[in-house]
Image (cartoon, rainbow, N blue to C red; front, side, top):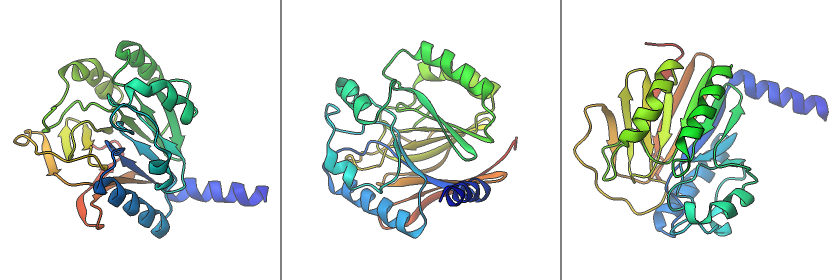
Length: 255
């Protein structure tokens, strides 16, 4: 049995893993149910190694709803926390067995750094700087709730840009995922691809005119899927029917 487990782990690392991400999802709407169904369908088709969230896990004040969690695929769940989670942050940390609302997770070739935008960001910046410096992962991804860039009604955060962009440039972080605005968007800013993945189930709302950095935009419920294989990281957003809203490929150390 132990040899079999080691073999499965080796195969997962060798041939890549698929993870999913959803944001702004924990509201009792048809959209949340549809996205949960999509995730279960995709997990049955091709297993997911883990599920990440970009925050606002439970509306309106962060109280955990076990029913929502049971409707998701039976895979490890790694949450970021948003403004709607803040009133019940302690309870959510206990539920997800986390000591702090910011942490790192390594899954095969991908290392994910989760930040908490409602907390002390300067302290988190120091932690992130050290974590990125010592990371040996081929693919490093940052997940946080409030976006640095967005064409949504909330828009991107200038304070987050001034605080985090120097680190992203210094360490050539290829991918940043956020929620907060309830739509899907892909923006390219220098080396870094920024995604807004706030269509996990909460009520949608229109966007502003697209940013000059915008590469793709859709006001639709969705989940994001990421697959790392060797020198490439493939991402695609699917709507509840399984239709592809956007697809992109990042290549290791490309300019």
